[in-house]
Image 1 (tube, helix red, strand yellow):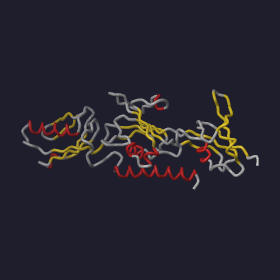
Image 2 (spheres, rainbow, N blue to C red):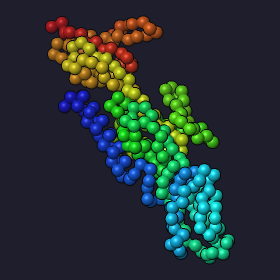
Image 3 (tube, one colour):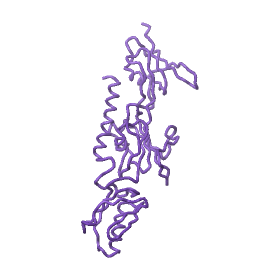
Image 4 (spheres, rainbow, N blue to C red):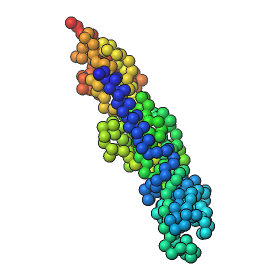
Length: 291
């Protein structure tokens, strides 16, 4: 099995993982079952309220832009910013206070999520803004975005908004490219592929999921499949770059490999060993054997 075949199989596995996650989660924006009790209700959310004491009081109610909705018998109820359990408590208190019930049996769940959202950008099939369900994780978000592209790197970067802020669009601080910050989480997608679901980050309102484009390395000379290859991991060695190109031919040698590298706009040739790291944009040249 060639390295290219292995890469395609790995990509297919990740795509299948995301597809299975999407199917398991149901629809993209509508889920009949209630999420975690600490979900914060917001404008445009559609709530399902079930009253076991009187069926006529059960139904679906849309939270309006002012954070309220109208409920039979008690009128306007302010729920924006409350958790689902707090909404249940508020409705029960109003029903009891107005003398309609002693101990009303009320449950509240979210029928359609619209107030909270996440942003998925970068090397995914359908980048965009997606509704955040109460227990949405990274795999589900990538599945909704159609999974990663073949040009994607092997990681996803989750950027949490600053405390007290919910951005109206994707947030991509300098930390995404440079050093990590407290609000930036890097997830190795290969770890997820290998079953490390502890890396499956839970998402918050306003999160941005950024999938970077894989950096490229060029491999030429006496290799089986010369060309440009995506570096699916940060620390790619010369040997790994050669394996992407199918390995060295019978006429090639691994003892005289050089890299053509652009440094400050100037082209330099560097002699390297198989264990040396390659950089983005490097051209690896494999020389011919003397005999």
